[in-house]
Length: 268
Ligand SMILES: [Cu+2]
Image 1 (cartoon, rainbow, N blue to C red):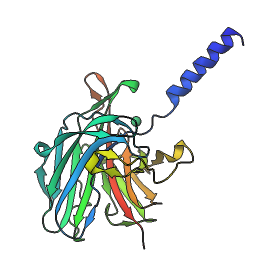
Image 2 (cartoon, rainbow, N blue to C red):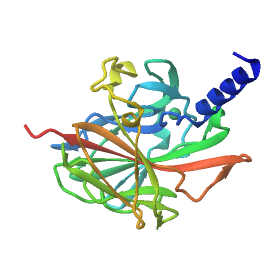
Image 3 (cartoon, protein in one colour):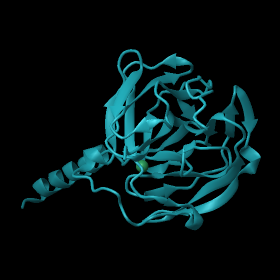
Image 4 (cartoon, protein in one colour):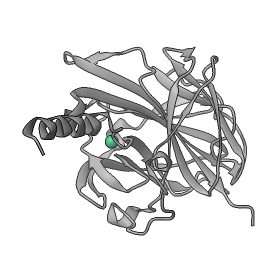
């Protein structure tokens, strides 16, 4: 092959690599069970990772905020966080864990505002503001309330009350306003987190036929609303990209994303 053709091919290959979507980063706030019969102490793990593949886990810095909202009251949990090292299938990353003693009945909306993460490959900061709801005794209180986070997905269906095959709907908001046509990445937590080991189980629940199934991409409508039919039991993460009002951090671009996790169960 002529040298010029070879260089062209290499250039083309490099461009393809650049254009290839990086598998979606996902901020997790994990606990095994989101719908509990009664209040008890639960474990929580905060991990910034690639949940479908149990892939590369990014180092988290100390979060800006971590709190829980119950019956409209906010309880700060930031100082309860303990650093841990979370093992993915390919590396280890700095993460956090805590425990929380649930009380009474109702919804507990856990909210995490992580420190912006510098993504070297893209030369941007990413801040995935994340919600996860745990309910006790089936008594609904706060699940559908807007917390007022800079980037937030407001659920239209209970995030803890979904059968497999149900639809999960939400409204994407940025700075308190719906975000028309927001782009939302969806991922299945495909490797069970083993909390005792601070690691993902090696076994995958499903195999993806192709990359479009690893990180699924859906769009909100003009009102910022989206819907997703849940095909399998387990935890599903939804991440609306770059919807928050802050667009810069330390002189670089910042993507302020809104994440919510929902859990579906099989009818059996
Ligand atoms: Cu990634």
